[in-house]
Image (tube, rainbow over all chains, first blue to last red; front, side, top):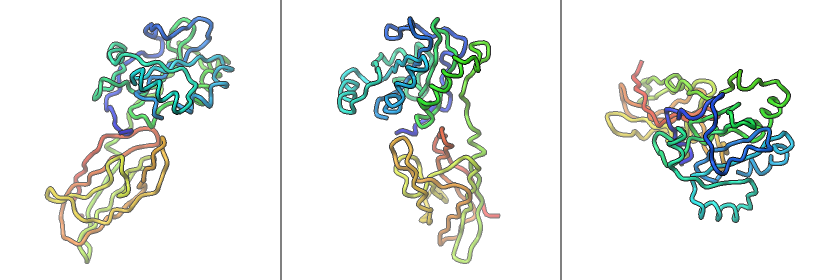
Length: 43
Length: 227
């Protein structure tokens, strides 16, 4: 259900942290990279 | 997803580069991209990644919490937003605004942390008391400003219910005001709601789910008694 909630937010990377590397995240040549985490594309 | 598609040109112009990481399998992603004619770059990743990164939903670790991160060219997080509910996801337009502010030096990163998350005070969202009426009982439910609960027409969240001695009473819960949110029609109750039924009762429980504009609390119960 879309309203399912997690009461405790995940810890996750915070401002100032180095974001974990991943093959699909290429930073080169981009001033800013936006990472969107989604459970599904159905929105 | 269309939100990102419709903002793609503005994001690129602002200097942003989008990577969407999804819990959907590659097959589901491919079908959705084809069917919806999506153009934003979407990648399927292993559910194990969410836990490794500390972004797994605490109740369903196979999916991430809805989250948006902006990284600089060194991979440092310069802006982050996690939300407890999909309905609170960062709008693409907001991300473009943030990048424009970062580029203009209006947001100093990362020395000035910009983290938009937090949990509303759900306990303060709803209060209730009972009233004896000529016909029976009424419960007056007060919903704090900025919050809403759901009316009897609601099919996704928990609608407002009155329970007495372990049984739901046949009370006239208002249908709610129709609101379209994240592609779903919901029915909101706001302000003060009076729910009446034709039986005497001294106390009971209100069952409800409270949300604000971006987040939803869990289905909840609230004790009430007549004044």
